[in-house]
Amino acid sequence: MATNVEIATRRVASTNPATGELLRELDCASDAEVHAAVARAHSAQPAWAALSVEERIRILRKFQRLLHENKTEVATLITQEAGKPYVEALLTEVLVVLDAARFLIDNAFAFLREQPVPHGSVAMKAKKGRILREPYGVIAIISPWNYPLSIPAVDALAAVITGNAVVLKPSEFTSLIALKLASLLHTAGVPKEVFQVVVGDGATGAALLNSEVDKLIFTGSVPTGKRIAQAAAARLLPVVLELGGKDPMLVLDDADLDVASSAAVWGAFVNAGQACLSVERCYVHQSLYEKFLDACVAKAQKLRVGNGMDPQTDIGPMIHGRQLRIVETQVEEARTQGARVLAGGARLPELGPHFYAPTVLADVTHKMHIMREETFGPVLPVAPFSGDAEAIRLANDSEFGLAASIWTRDKKRGEAIARQIDAGTVMVNDVISCFGISEAPHGGFKASGIGRSHGQFGLEEMVRVKYLDTDRLPRMKKLWWYGYGEKLTHQMEAFVDLQFAHRIGDRLRATLKSAGVLKSRKL
Ligand code: NAD
Image (cartoon, rainbow, N blue to C red; front, side):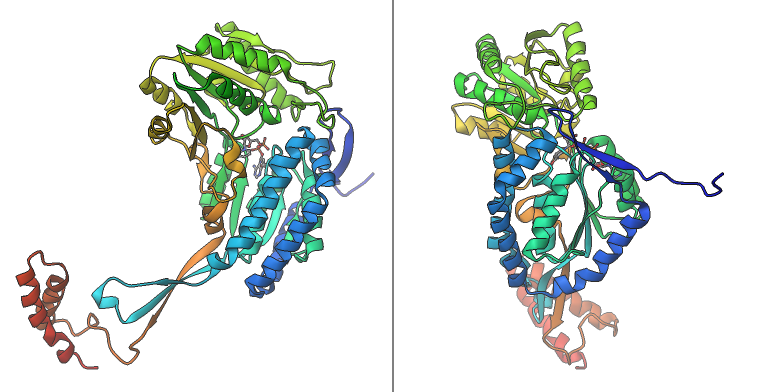
């Protein structure tokens, strides 16, 4: 009989969601392995940060070239592991990462350059101020499965170009893509300890959160984000939280019906609706409502659902049964509460275990979960509205605030409404493509998150800002140091008046009074 208690190693399975085929099983990193990875990252990071920015940019350029050369292999792996159509893997993952690298190659040097801080205050004119942007040290990234390359890669590239080391815990459903990212970065010249992947499930993520990392970039669901925020608060770990959404689409009475209905169908069904920026609810002016529904139904029924490796496929499988059941439950609840199911509304078991038909629902209301909770599946729920004020109210009636879109032929009207929507991004006459604009910040209001990724704001998340101040008159004592008394008080009152008195006469009088200040202070 064994005397030692054997602790079974947890494993994660990477499977093809279209076929159920097991691609590979991997051991989850243990707590000790996670801590060891973070320790290795800490040891390697100073040398990485000591490289010139030009050298890090050279390595990033090499990574970009390698990713481009391997685009077919990488996109194929994404389709096999995450299910999305190959063309989507190419455009929304590989291309997004290539362009993020382009943005960093073009901007990292200027971003990391010392930034002078001119001083406006008369009292501080003799000082030279600069902003330094320094790496945090080790940045942890915990990522989801729905954009298994672009989400962790965009964050990781911004982290390493600014001199950080990274430990990535990818989703347990898409480990292979993360390992491929690591292999490309290492081949390009990023040291193995500077970019590491710890494979595993939520417990592995929790171990990383509890390790000696200096910042955490988390992308995932609101419930996990809240758990992470609580744990991070206990030790004041800085975090970026990129969480879920319930993005509204507002189709105004002057919208182009054909364009807007195509946008709704693509925006709701791309990646089988499993995009944080998906159109999750659609509000249409009552004058267009029925025609809009007809157009969406006709377009949805033409879509081909199947294996993402088939070039004819528009919509692939959902990632797993749990996600599919959430969709099924919300659609069934809406149906029983009076929503009309105009297209889809059922699984497609003949295609495989995780396929769900693109679904168009009409007459949904805010009492239904389908309009309040993230669905994250191929469902387009549509409701009518009667005026702009009502559309804005409905759009903002949500705990989420990731993104929104407004559809109108009148750009000014669209922009005026956009300014009244509580969301991190509002697009006028487009959906989702903001994620592919490397310069545009990505992040949410309200429960959709804290902080930003992408672009300048994403870079700012990767650095600690240090203010460096050098006094140009090192032999002069400061006027405000000790030596307090009535005289200094009068002189300082005059000094304040000199700068801020409303009347010019008061300022002149103050100038004369404060002239004695310098003389009276010993140098
Ligand atoms: P999830 O929250 O279940 O998991 C995300 C990651 O967190 C995974 O790697 C998981 O293993 C890890 N994790 C789980 N429990 C953990 C814990 N206790 N401590 C540390 N890590 C833990 O989310 P998901 O199902 O992988 O992804 C879908 C969600 O992600 C959706 O809600 C979607 O809206 C959101 N998302 C948001 C964005 C955005 O940019 N705002 C982008 C993509 C996805």
